[in-house]
Length: 251
Ligand code: NDP
Ligand code: 8X3
Image (cartoon, rainbow, N blue to C red):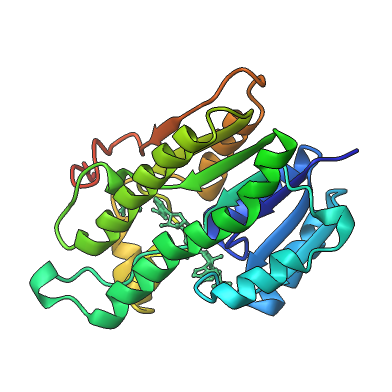
């Protein structure tokens, strides 16, 4: 029987690439996002790779909707082997003392509380079955703050703490927990950060060859496909001319 993976935020970027990588490697896929049309397009692409696909449209900030979606899974989709908590992003790059309250709430509600909700809904089944893998998409931003990163960095530090905490709480089981910490990845991330300003977003990747979603999907799959006795706790992946969240050499 094929294994089942659920990827949140599979309509774009890193999540879409992870869904593709897992489908290519024999997983049946539950994919989530808020954009119905885009989710259907990704679903059809994954079906063409041979996967069975269940698209679920909900906002991870809406706990009732997330609960209804997961509790309403058809019987054949309930035994989730891999959860990739990817949905998230950065909103704004203002100094902390000038930050926008709505942006702060969006980041905290999505990157922390959304990830927690999905974990709370799916991990009990993994513990009961004594197998499973939770992959959280953290960030280099969680290792150290950078200018204007303040709340976003705090949410990714929280992802590290929540990954470490979960790893402790499931240590008596065969459930594994991995925190993937990417650096500069060219996706829709910066367009979101700059509220749709594409030119400003493009500037983030000028003079440096950034990572791609596919690069990150490779490391997710490395962790997921490791032998059962191997738990990849963390992976930090940077672009070659990047040394940290704030040290980037541009040519
Ligand atoms: P994208 O903007 O390309 O993708 C973000 C994804 O998250 C989309 O699929 C979006 O789907 C989904 N999403 C956002 N908010 C919600 C929500 N409230 N409910 C459900 N889904 C949501 O960015 P990335 O692929 O780059 O980002 C993915 C993850 O990777 C994020 O957690 C980000 O913080 C992290 N990351 C990104 C890095 C980068 O440089 N790009 C580096 C390090 C980490 P939809 O719009 O359909 O809801
Ligand atoms: C995304 C990477 O360095 O732009 O988490 O914060 S960074």
